[in-house]
Amino acid sequence: MLEIKNLTAGYGNSRVLFGIDAVIPQKGGTAILGRNGAGKTTLLKTLIGEVPVSAGDVVLDGVSIRDKRVVDRVDLGIGYVPQEHAVFGTLTVRENLTVGAMTSRGLKEIDTIVDLFPKLGNRLRQVAGTLSGGERKMLAIGRALMGRPKILMLDEPTEGVWFGVIDEITERLHKLSQEMAVIIVEQHLEMALRIANQVLVIDRGRVALSGEPDEVRNDPELYRCIAV
Image (tube, rainbow, N blue to C red; front, side):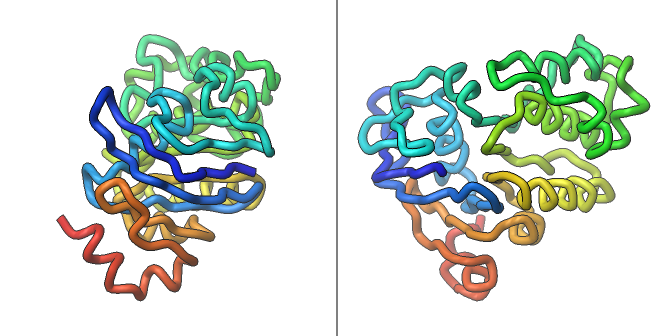
């Protein structure tokens, strides 16, 4: 579904990614691992269109989207949950979800999001800024899903989340990965590997290691690339 071809990108004259290649299938989880500053977030921002492509291509369903605007990529089916500022704090939970449905792909029923994250069902009238960290993450994921994406990209979905909620989020993302493509940047190694069908390990803007979770888990190169 999504092909990343020899992708080079960065900020101004500063290059962060160098020749990234990957194929994201229609269904399944892809975990992007690496230490802080390796280029993981930049890769997601390039795929959604926030960072321009310097060289290479991003191809969705056989069509290049490297010059598409963010809003066009969302309309084409890419959902994105950023690491920070992922919800509108002054809007209610229901209003946040409704904002997420403002794409040409149409409205997903709020009930389906509540089925996925039951905690949100009791808080639809609550202002999002008063939610716990885990509830805000659930809301951010739910809002992205309201646009009916084909690909869901998440940047550190367990950051700042109480450990008791991490398993719940992991279970939901694993379920989603059986229905659609899920790309996750995550420092919580075990959580990422539970969701993933394939793993990309980024080191200094390049793919240092890739493969199935069990292969990557047992490769010493993984721990060299994620060590602080």
